[in-house]
Length: 210
Image (cartoon, rainbow, N blue to C red; front, side):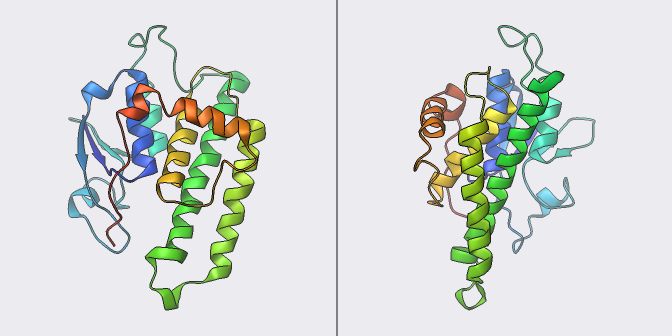
């Protein structure tokens, strides 16, 4: 399988970290692609009508896009490869809904962070709208506070943890509003998770090209 990737995308990194945690990274050919709403990438558009990465290109099968969908697919492939065969997306019960709830919040963190960057560094300065920036910053702060209270740090690693770690790593990489201040549980958990082999193998790098 081929993973259309971007070395500075929190969404793409989430998929690759998931693949490492699932023991599937050796089955992926990872190909970096620059994408932006203002810069069309024909190779990515050929596989995803939204023109965004990540995209999982499967031999003889339709391509899959969106990090949530790709992770869900990968989770059907790895049973028995992990030492205990445990799925990274719990199958049932409250454990499933908690993992998906956390994943949803952290996808929103990445979305809000990208919006903040549009209103601070990516959009031409005369076109920036500070009240919109401030609204997205409020979403980030509220989400950090929610994670401090709700993240199940003692649970076995699941897709929500992977989403949190990759989103927060990107927040720091882009020097966006700090998630550490007054959130000791979240900061300590992140520092420990960031030392996992899956995170060390997938460092963020590069700048957005618009």
